[in-house]
Length: 417
Image (spheres, rainbow, N blue to C red):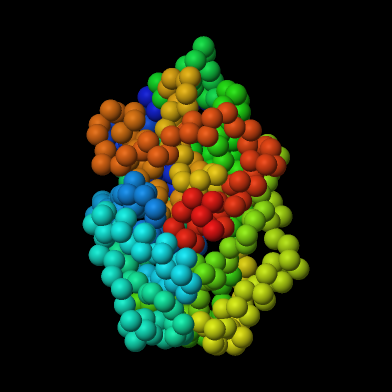
């Protein structure tokens, strides 16, 4: 390894949305001696596969502010780079069909309004005008969140990286980090395929591989690699430019426009999880699809969704996309300093919302390292909040899988049925 890259004030492990955002926000905060290490190409894991939703319907103000920071960062990046990053802010229609989901929605609305969002109830006529394919005759309550939208994960990660580079950060690809270097209780660098890199701070943002790296210093990162997947329908004109996202928590379903068709996500009661110590180095080499079981699930959901999407039987399902996100037992992010360590910040557990929360992750990381204040109260994301964790245990992984099933309900506690 060249001498110019064997030491840095901050070393970031991982070139996805969280790692590149951390690099951008650190340089934005005045830390320019930043080195990001990525073993492959940038944004080739989960960051190039997200459904791309940037929705603010969450159960705590901190997460709403994390997502709001992403929206603000997108505007900054577009100004810095002089180009559009492709954020489509067309809002979100969210409908509740049962008494329990209506109660949850009202509680979430209160949190959103407390965070300053312009959420409001809409009638069926307005909902149909915004989303012509959607039938909400049986809905008990429907709301619209104008600040919501969607974006492309790979484009956003690239924008973070380019802006960080312009401010002095270095990005090295083709270098695999094999472990964290710990001396006493202090993490003082990383071990890589090309030697040791020493640093005053290490930011671990390795996505699905975060647990294996944390294990190198005997820290049980509180998350499990959990499969997320969605379908994209043929471009038959079902959607048009400007249509909002749609969330239907009673059906565990979410949709958004995608090149004339729809992106449709469906959430199982118990998603598939994976042993974090047994993952392939490249997500493209992982077999994440069970065509028979997945098709059966799609058909079952399609039958239920016909009451709200009468034309669903006419839609051609052209693509099935899957990837791994790291979910936590409470469905909330992980970012902070593991107990008993110095010099280490972990940033992960994105719970399928890495794109939406990426700006907030970067700001919190920069705040921890620089000591500069942040409007985001990161205590809710404390890495040690579950105590001692074994992320390989099936019982723990099942807790994380259940948390994914509650995502369409705004990340409310898994115990709320």
